[in-house]
Image (tube, rainbow, N blue to C red):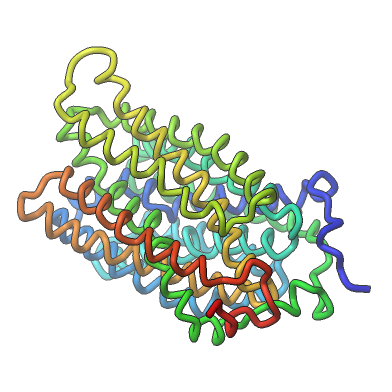
Length: 419
């Protein structure tokens, strides 16, 4: 009998939802927001400028993206439990290696591993496994799983500060790595056993699926990508250089960490609401709206620059990060639904591996240019203006491409466009 995904209940599969949520949370050490808290220590240890640090970070990110095109497709054919263990165990080992680095070559290697296993495979496994399992409840399921990221953003920044104070910045990475290997991996093994039966080739969603080769021939895919990259690329630039923002605005590191907590909190209702909207209206109809809170956040930060006194000045980082949190909450949930909606689920692992790689490549390109701008004396505001202009230019292209998809996805949708 074919697997009827419409009958899959979130309540009855809550253990599997927790599997995806935990994987998303354990991506933390490979995310820019966590690594950025050690940027000053790393630059001091290796005598790097801001541009030098960003360049090495980008080189590692590019390498991780190239690997992800290959390793990410294995989720379509390999047992999920083994795949998830490799992802979480890889993060743990990468943290252990970070505690031992003593050269720039080792630094690039560890950055590559952290980005590949953390930002790459952990998030790829969480989103892909949930998106291909649920169809009628895909939006709600993904929104619940995405709670793992705000959970990570609430815990890991404070943990970074605490581990550095207690053990020093390198040994703190060792403690974190051991926790991943001896606590994280066994829990993931247990939760992965709850995976519902995989869909068969007889399923409607499988019959309507396009392969990675087919979507690479579809011009609409390339038209969607610039907008799809905005969140990952631009927030990587802004977060990686957030210590510069704090210095320019007179914010303390503690205030920045606290603002990140508010960022994580605001992601929760935004993600849950967007999940309901996906199931009711479809991801393709509401995907363009995800840029609204991001644009508002950029404009708010730009035009509040001269406010330095009073309660409002104190609240600025929280308001800014709250709006960014709303943007990320909607973007991750809706963005996680857009590809299976447009191209099906049979080859979702290989398609998402490709799109994840594109995202990671974009996160590598941004910091290089940003580092050059900052080293030449440009302020943080220049990064905000550049981000705003990029989003505004990519939006019309997205709208044009989405309008060329038929309202009902046909069999082999990559080869059929509206005339």
